[in-house]
Image (cartoon, rainbow, N blue to C red; front, top):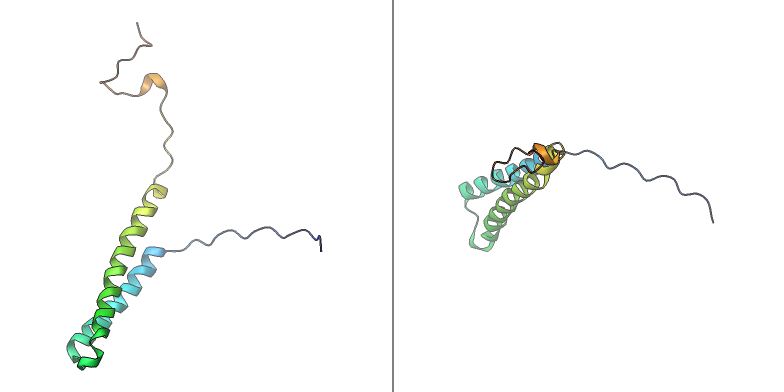
Length: 95
């Protein structure tokens, strides 16, 4: 019962944006096909389902790109106090 627990697995590196674009592309294809064949009145909701899939895919792509943006940049170390280069803040270390 008190056996040691194995270490947790490291998370997989995935390409979320590519997955979202592929899924959104499939929704676009389905939407175009449905707009060409024009389903009967009882199946008009299929068109709206595809439109919602495209809209949510676009939102998902934007969200993932925005979420991953800070991770793509290397962590910037803050410069030393006297080396900020900001002209609006006077450097009081120099006389």
